[in-house]
Length: 323
Ligand code: PBG
Image (cartoon, rainbow, N blue to C red; front, side, top):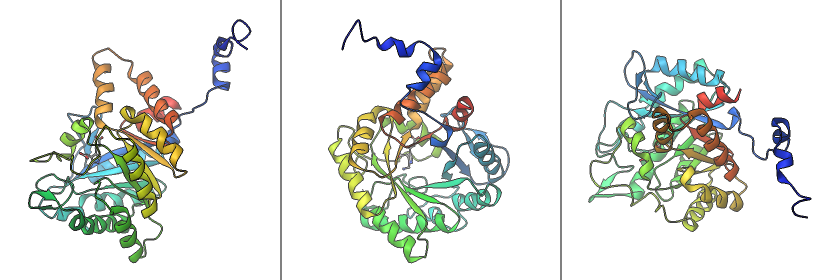
């Protein structure tokens, strides 16, 4: 059957008809809000590279976590801005580290909120790389030990889910083994499995003070040109015990999200990263895009591609727009 008998416009005629045949529904329950926590007290300070995002003290972090939960967003992912960096990233796995303190505070105040932590060393190393340097190169196996220690300290402080974003080989297995050895068998792992060496992380690195002082991350993060390799990463991580996998960034990699969807039944997260957010907010600020409409369209497209959940700097506000 084709035109004139078939007219696809019939079901686009009214809002109600469009609603009945809508294939993808975005809801607040799909979203995860990133939050940044820094040492020290006082008011939240705006992050210049990320409009309407803040560096929180523990007090304002707790307030913000309450607001995120009240908006209907089920989860946050925490990033720490430590006041001390060294070669061994020691503040990453310090029991009194900034993320660990933040976790305990939110856990007490907002017990139902799902707490995810980014497990990586780049904010904590003096050189800004995601692992330990040896002869100028990031040493994979030495780094695993520190990542596992970091994940265990996050779980012990109340994280429900630890999310390794370092892209070392074997880190999911190392983290699973360390969690289990400490009796933390219920802590889930969300692996940043297909994490590309992307220029879209720029605003985040400014926000997190984690730009490498020398070199770049192409020796461990993935080549943006590769999709088969992304599937290999995903399948390896699931084999090592990942409970959920991630594709990052999101919108430039919708094909990868789709292929991962077809390759696994595991839950998939997509990370709409800082550069994607900055493009939307900058264009909106210049009057070139309607921020609300463009953000909701982008998030819907990421879900349509196959993501079950989306980490987005718009999470809280999008939840408001969707209610
Ligand atoms: C840490 C990490 C990064 C992001 C999330 N975790 C930065 C990087 O890998 O350089 C980027 C998030 C964003 O751009 O929003 N490794």
